[in-house]
Length: 307
Image (spheres, rainbow, N blue to C red):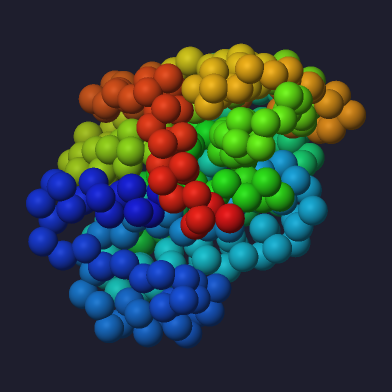
């Protein structure tokens, strides 16, 4: 989802050569394959958007897979980029790097100040390692390797599989299916009380390109060698219950929403402090209402691909 959005953004920005690989073309967990890729391609800048991602269920069921694959991917790409002389790299992390009970909104320096959310701890640890790896390469080699921490993302090419998706695409699929099949009740995991922030993936792509385009002195004067990442979010949040109601309305669902408090809620709230990003000259443009509607339309249009 994120990678394709960044490619769209770079294409419209007039980049003459954008080098990409699909999963079938390049296995980023294989060190030798990644080294060969960088040796063969003359790459100037890298957007590291590749990762194994998933919702609460997937993270909770497969923690070993999440920590292993993400550590492999980012280690192979970051080190190979350094060896190949890549001038600038942007590592995309996740807001789950922050403590489960972090003060809201969450500032960048909250990382590693408290206990992580247990359901996605393995993924969070891998992402923290990626940030620290970028910082270490800057300190030891002077590499201009930057990091961006996105909030919950959604949009075209999202994962709508109910066993592995995040909450927003899962809700879109559930309510659309309910309308199509005439169901009167839609179950939703958890109590509905947790609050989440959502950013459309095209805004994330725009923010990523903005951060990469900043001159080195401007970027590094806004951060520090030991807290070099930048939060990327919308700046406001909604409860899961509010989100479910909005999705139900957009999908035309008239029945009852039934919350299941026996299922995990995850972190009570995750709202990012985006003041650092604003100080660097970027703010989001796509509202949640417009983003939900357009994502629902994309999902319906690509329904066969969504499973």
